[in-house]
Length: 599
Figure (cartoon, rainbow, N blue to C red):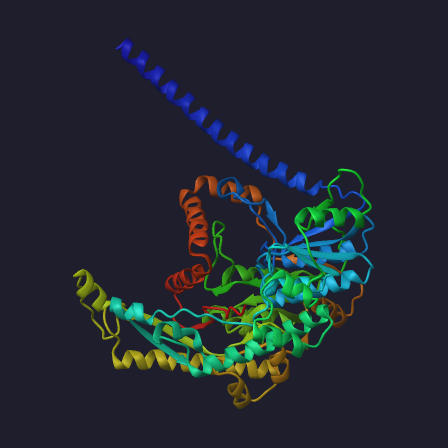
């Protein structure tokens, strides 16, 4: 017995020691990871800008509305931080008066922002040039979306073997009806509005005439914006530039050079030599680039007593709360409402600018958010600044603001509603041999049910619901825009508009970017000196890190999302939208599941 207790207590002690070591190791790992991230952040903040530096802006990088710290960089790779669009615009303004920054260098090759965002960037660069500092642009290949931005530069260069794209605009849509027919999956679709094209990919094999009409109108408005920019650099008229596109006259770099669309054909080393001369550097020293991600210019008024809240509404609108581990950009109603209430209760905040870049989403969530915004407006003026897209539910939450700003290329409107479900009975029965059976004590107890066709009465229920929500949508817009229901219906019907057209039909008040909206908010609140405080704020880094390390499913989700985005590319949005619709409780949608890609 003595030997038994000896081995028992020895084993128990070993287990205790092992447990202690495990926890020590766990916290050491957490400490190392946290220390690594903190150290990286400190190093980034400590970047020193030397005299005669050049601000480097890579157009191939994505600039979402709000900058993000990649807290999971050790697991997913990539940069530690990425600035948001507002950060980029602020840093360009700061560089304008920074005597250590001699100019800006733009690297083209595949713009990753929408056209409205590109407009704001182009305007900021044009303002920067008034300082007398240079702006140069270079690309081995320059798509026309990149050229829209780079055409503002003093000089645009491309590789001698490269080319500049000038070909007009096109919108390519994908349709799933044929695949669904082969799989014997029948979509059950309900919508209102002849232009509500959200459901067309699931019920048609090509775009409808109304959808083609609205896309043609969008292309015309955006192409005119492009032509104005291109002709300004080429020092010719828009009709001439348009004729080059219609004729396919610009195929090589030499074609572009001969028409003065660009200013030279150079290799990268020649550009670097040019930048050295412009910044008065000699010898073997390389140009002193400082990336827009590393550069931190001071923002006037940041420490003032009065504040303007910048509320970022980016992504699809969803019910409930978002998750810390999610990599998706969504406007989760529960989380967003908390941010609205923080702003409402903060006495230092005198006005609010809500930056909307959203294709919409859940009708219920949109209504809940609009209600909270109405309560906010009883205390503080609310100004909306629209980004690349503020459509459907994205327009719904914006429509009752005190004033709405949009860019000429903003995609907005889409005042319409749809509902969609799928009948998979034949797919399971005929393709897989799977059948379903049930027992219910009321006719509609199992509604909705994807394993059987909907009855006529059930379809009536859903269509009535869609019609009712559409009426509510129109009434909210009519009240916010001070127009009749009949007029809103005439410009509604699910139709999308450019910001330019939306100004003409009264859906927005002013053409302008975020800075203009902030200035208007300050004037409305009667303040001249103010700081801008952004909401939502970044979550506590250490708490999120602990959550990540302890939650295997969170890590797996992040990895899966990264993989899917890389593998599916632009088609990832379809997976994301269908998953969101499946996960949400709502069956009524104010959503553009695809934003027209006009390139």
